[in-house]
Length: 156
Ligand code: FES
Image (cartoon, rainbow, N blue to C red; front, side, top):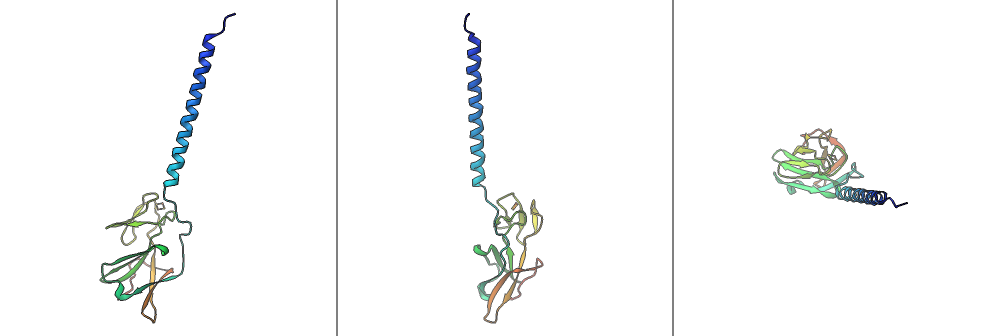
């Protein structure tokens, strides 16, 4: 009886093919996991409430914009007044960044105009506006737990 030469070749090819498939699968999985780790993650605590001080009226000349990173809030001033807008995306809570004309969510591509109005989803709602109050001391306070209609400004 002679050994089956084809049987040996098929086994070796099959093994190599299987090994290559496993290797390719592991490379794909590793690539996916690495890309997932580098993706911006939604904020786990998007709904911080409470108040925070932002300074005095004179600290906000018309045209100024300040970002309070620890409060995830932008404060703008224009000729009509001062207003505070949440930086928390209304889709899944990622933090939006601002450019000259819009807020951009890095997670899933939503963007908003500078009044917080959704221009492109998947964000389902506009960015939240917060109430601004002036203390007896003259300090301005943003109240994150008190939402106001977009366009509501602290008149200076
Ligand atoms: S969290 Fe902003 S678009 Fe998804």
